Length: 102
Image (cartoon, rainbow, N blue to C red):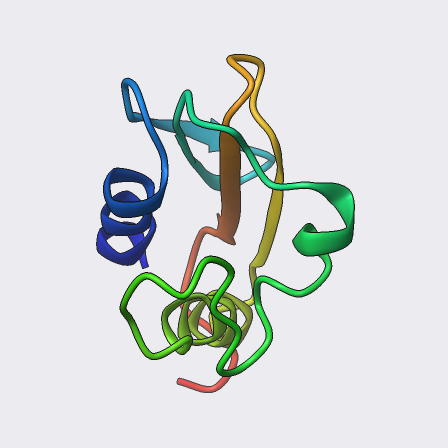
């Protein structure tokens, strides 16, 4: 999950890519952001859709779809928004403990 988000930020974003990991409500929060053009609201609603490729620069359009599936399978959530630096910011939260399916 983290590898995919960092790779996307490096490939599709611009400027410095920042990764932050912090405790969050009994779990962990991971944020990956860049200083690029960001993702518009209309686009943000589609980035986790299977086969979606925003700028058509390589990739299969499966990476963010898989990230969302893995995060949710572990009881977490993932979102995208505009970073304070103006670029894209992807944030996922995972609860502590063992997932219910294990």
